[in-house]
Amino acid sequence: EPEVTQTPSHQVTQMGQEVILRCVPISNHLYFYWYRQILGQKVEFLVSFYNNEISEKSEIFDDQFSVERPDGSNFTLKIRSTKLEDSAMYFCASDRYSNQPQHFGDGTRLSIL
Amino acid sequence: EDQVTQSPEALRLQEGESSSLNCSYTVSGLRGLFWYRQDPGKGPEFLFTLYSAGEEKEKERLKATLTKKESFLHITAPKPEDSATYLCAVLYSGGGADGLTFGKGTHLIIQP
Image 1 (cartoon, rainbow over the protein chains, first blue to last red):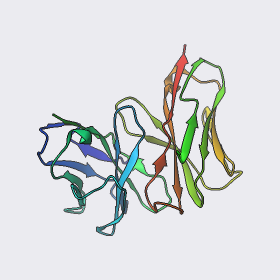
Image 2: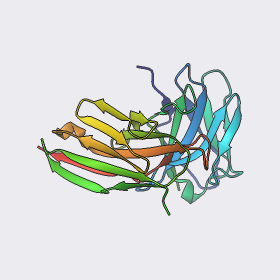
Image 3: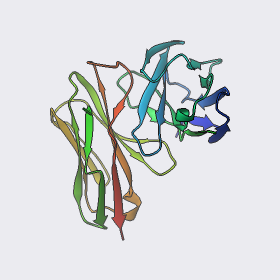
């Protein structure tokens, strides 16, 4: 069964450094998403991406965040200058049509020191 | 106020002991309600989608139902491998268009 893959599984970064999280969505999907989950808290929506542009973003997704689909298979989340509070699990998700189930990867655990 | 509330927060059952998990929502313009299972250190795994009140979906020991204000996930004769955190999420027209709004989840433990 096709799946969403994310790399790396764990990223440790010094505060203030830039980090890029990578995702390969399911191949025939058209909508792409990033979510985060701070330890012990609920999963929170960050951003959605369709037709090579951001379609929606949450209040969490400020100017420090950006997303890109650099080629036909990868979808990336960049955090420009990391803060301690950016430490969380970051999940990528994709679906083929809006309103359809979103399928999630196993996440990248981001630890900011 | 949370838009999606799940109860109980945690539930411990004996193997074979059936029960129900609740997800209540206050959003308007529901476009879909989704149940996911999350194992430790993993991403949410899709279980069911419900789109309208009265709808029911079933898969093995799990059955999901939907009313205008809440959804239930019924677990019949659970086994230890059903132990996980069960997440409820909604898509709705009133607020964000594309992003799922999640509840905090119910942590389910099935003891042999």
